Every structure is written in C-alpha cells, then in structure tokens.
Length: 272
Image (cartoon, rainbow, N blue to C red; front, side, top):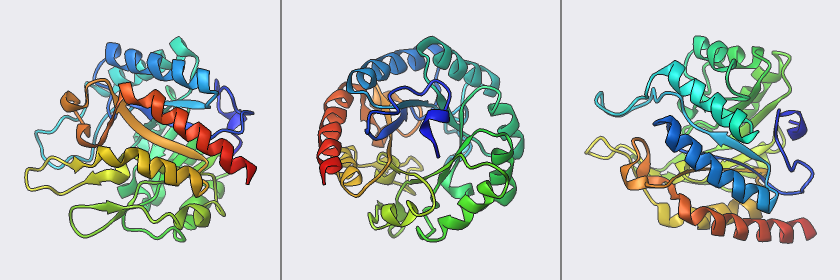
C-alpha cells in the first residue's frame, strides 16, 4: 500500500508510523469536529500521517438497546465534513455490500470488521470500489490466515490494502496481542496495530464491553518496537460518557503525550 496515494494524507515522507484515530462512533457533528481538530493539531506537529476514524453505524452490538448510530447518511456526511474541514482522509467500517458502495462516496478507506473479514462478498465489494481496504484480523484467526483475505482484495484489482491486528480471543472475556503476528502479516501487507480494541474485555454479563485503557501505552509501545506500520487508537474527550466502547478508549487529553513517546521510539527503531 502506497500511503501517498491516499487523498489528503500528509507527512507521508516523515519515516513515521501512520495513525488511524478518532471516536468509536460518530455521535454528532460537533464532537467529531472537536476530536478531529485536536488530533490534526497534534499529528501536524509530530509529522504523523493521519486518517480520521469514525464508525457511521455500529452493527455489532451485544444488546438490542445499545447505541447503533445517529443515522447512516447523517453520519457519513459528518465524516465528509471532517475531511473537508481539516483536509484529512477518513476511514469507516462497513457491514454489507451496499454499505461499501454508499460509504465509498464519503470516505477514503473502507474497513472490514474483524467478525466479517472472512465474508468474501463483502471484502470483494469493498475492493471493487477502488478505495483503500483495511482488513481487521478476525479475533479467531491466525496471522498466517490473513494472507487469504489480502489476496481477495488484490485479486479484485485493488492493491491498496492493509491489515489491522485487534487482538485474539483469550478465553471468553479477554483479548491478547500476539506480537509475532506483526512481522508475519507484514509479508502480505502493511500492518496496523489496533491498540484500544485489543484491550477490550468482551462478553461481560452486563452486555456492555469492558476494557483496560491503563494498558494502552504499553501495547502501543510494543507495537512500534515490533514493526507496526500504523497505529489504530480510538479516543474521546469524555470516554466515560461515550456512546460506544468508552471502556477501552483513550482520553483525548492523553493523546499528545502518548504520540510524542511513540514518535521517539519510532526514531530509535529506525536507527536499528
């Protein structure tokens, strides 16, 4: 994947990792713009190539009364406004073939959720839009098996594909990152480490996913050291009241210090 081919992506020659970051879900225009403005300011200072992330809808919920979105078209238009306002590319996840065609009109990167990455029709539909495709590694899949998901994209005449590791199921209620997977999957495509989702604690008896945000910096540091090309990290200015995945998101106030530390580690790794 050639980063410079992603529209509006800056700092691609910085020898830095790239960042996919934003709220779990688009809750409204003001919150999306507020979060994007802060992250753009930080990444411009640190010369980190940045893609704004926000789900236009949340289809995978534990309970029927969980927040799923503010309306598909409304959320997609907000993603486009973020892109136009701050001159940054955007990424959102899709869940159906129809989502691929619709979301491609608004965003630059289409993300295939981990639970759906084996769905051939969905992966091919995303690839055929010509957009960059971000394949989340299934929590149930080995790093080696992601080669086949990547091939589905490239065989659809789309070379713009990356793989994101978001942890592997460990028992019923925990996730673990096998850092051996990063160099393994880099044989197939650029690799992103999804730091915050890999710290989820799913399947809680309450039906609300838990998490370990205290471990975010530990996992992120290890990802840079083991060669991750990119970092995926969800953030919010009020995680406790976020409408989705607040339990494992990074508070926006802590983002600048964390990214500063990661850039320092990346510079050291580049010297090795």
